Image (cartoon, rainbow, N blue to C red):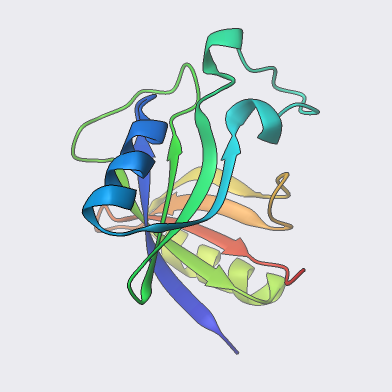
Length: 141
């Protein structure tokens, strides 16, 4: 079974600028880029007009590695130093649940496992050592 770890950056409204910078500085290739407005247009959580152009989710290829990023959702605090998390991608919902449950032992659930517009199972947990993970099942299209 395949599992992949990737860094994930949470930006403070400047995600587009970050992408442009990494394209030039690191020769990054944009694999996917969707605005927050596009991502949440049919959501139960309306996005303020001023945040609709924020990066909802982007994936960049840099050399042999992937880097993911998004802008922080409006109303969520942004802290310098805590904007880097680790993503764990699996290809199986049960494996995603197993990893999430193991990491939450003596840790803190930030977002319970749930279906999102992009992933069938997604959650965020900080482990007992203070490391935050975004765990998700990726469906091959």
